[in-house]
Structures are given as structure tokens and as C-alpha cells.
Amino acid sequence: MKKLILIAVSVLIVGAPALAQSSVTATHTNRPIEHYRAYIGEADLFNSKGTRLTQPWQIIRQDRANFHQYGIRDNEGGSDSFFADPANRQSMEAMLRNGTMTREAAAMIVRGNVWIDVDIYGSQGTGRWIDVTVSD
Image 1 (cartoon, rainbow, N blue to C red):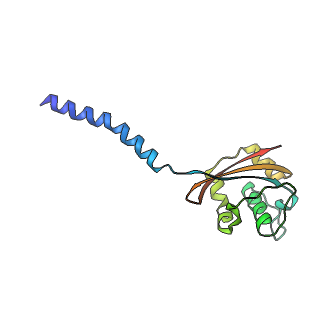
Image 2 (image 1 turned 90 degrees about the vertical axis):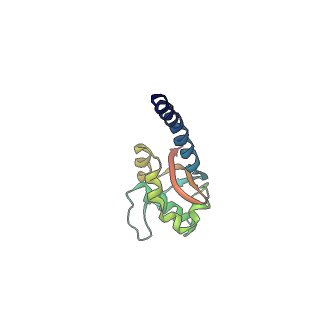
Image 3 (image 1 turned 180 degrees about the vertical axis):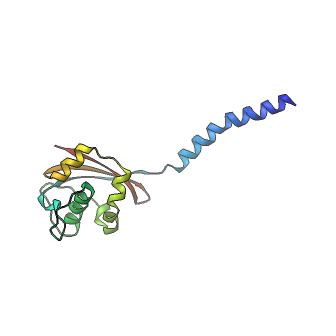
């Protein structure tokens, strides 16, 4: 009887990590959707009513609205297809909250006149998070 119990326990212990590992792999389907580079200029620091924006996600969202909706584009600013959809721009705050951006990058975006690189991640066309970096 002791032998049978030990065998059953060892099968459960050995089998558990394999099950846990395969379930993580099976559910992780998020991947890069798109990348773009944009210049955060003076026009991006204010909303359409003229109010100064104070959060980086607001400014990045305004940049994409300026680009796609209002036709306000900085020289050499990059295009993207993902944020051409207003519903995707609306999800910008949540996507940035789920993604990464350093405090230094956030402060530089709020000041403006910087280039940003944005990587959009998700699955089946649905954005889950963005990673934002400031570059030269």
C-alpha cells in the first residue's frame, strides 16, 4: 500500500510542472502588431479645445488624433494603421497602463518636442499594451 501511494504522488508532482508550463504557452498569443515613430510637437500638447494636456497618454493620443483625424502632421512623423481607428485611440490610456514607459520618458513627452517610438502589442488585431520610448 505504501508503494502505491508514493508512485501516485510522484506522478502528480512530476506531471504538474508540465501541465502548468503548457497552459502558459497555450494562452500567450499576444505579439507585436505594429511599430511607429512620431514627433511630439507643440500641437500635440493641447487638446482640440485648447486645454494643455498633462499626462503622457493624453499627449500620445492627441498626436495620433492630430495625425489621423485632423491632418496635423509633423515633418518626418510616422504613420500607423492601428490608431487610425478612433476606438483604438480611446484605449490608449489602458494600453499604456499595461505597457512600459520610464518616468524620464513620460516627463519628456509632457514637455514636448521629442521623438517617440511606440510598439503596439496584442492579438487578432486587438491592442493589449504599448511600449513607449523617447529617442533622438
